[in-house]
Length: 269
Image (cartoon, rainbow, N blue to C red):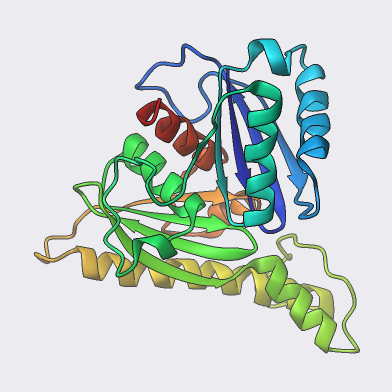
């Protein structure tokens, strides 16, 4: 079995895949278990071991006997190294970590490829495998990442903006008269209360940002002016909230990054 670990600045997503997963599978195929956890930067390798062991025990899987591989992407170097050391110490093999030198199977057309986050690479790999190209991936996390993949499967670049929760926290924190706001769709785009007005501004504002950015990406990708069809894939913790309100998002893939990790692991075995 393969353990895929996506470590973000705020949350960590862990997925367990069957060992004999088919090459042409969907992102959720063969996914035995998955968990979304808070990212704790100070966890030691031993603490990571206890946490992973408890998650696997909850579904009757032995960390030492059943795991045959581990794939990791991380935007937090401290946690990435703790996971690497945990795997080396307790499983006695090397994990596949998306970092410079790891074969992803996708050309990175960035001025400095080392700057590209590991999760962005995993998402690009998975999106092209599932939907081909050109494609735009929108990853809702601490930041909103837009990643653009060419028809040939090249990572072209993208855009990075503040995430929904980060923006909301900053606004509420700087305005004394504003209290906590639930991230749910309001009754109308025209808010009738302060809470509804904030919900409208945040939720519909980000929907407009997504659709506007996709329009701009599509205009660049449509080099011949023939209306190139661009696949738009949403992932991340708040994709389920924004995607139904967007006119451009065509697919929601909660396990996109995990699927990309599985693909990269397969290419580096």
